[in-house]
Amino acid sequence: QVQLVESGGGLVQPGGSLRLSCQASGKLFSMNAMGWYRQAPGKQRELVASRTSGGILYYADSVKGRFAISGDNVRNTVYLQMNSLKPEDTGVYYCNADVAIGGKLHMDYWGEGTLVTVSS
Image 1 (tube, rainbow, N blue to C red):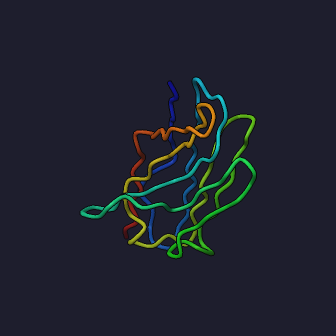
Image 2: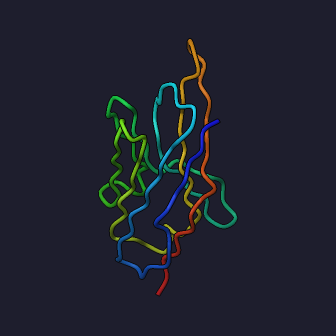
């Protein structure tokens, strides 16, 4: 099993910053990628940013230029630096790990989520 533990959520005013952290542990044979999803009230979960083990980064258009994803392959950690936060960034942020389990097979693991609220 793989466990993901997130931290860093909270309440912040518009224009403020937060940094989310996620630590993966357990039976990690090979990590393909780690990333962050978010789910706003009444909306579907969406991919915010991701980082492959080879360093390829992805950002949703809505966060480009404001968020930055980084990580450590050895420690199996991923971070999300969120700047210039907007009320529409509010939601539960989930850490995701795409783990190779053999051959071309892989599994997705999820953290429990951390709440980010952007409000004045």
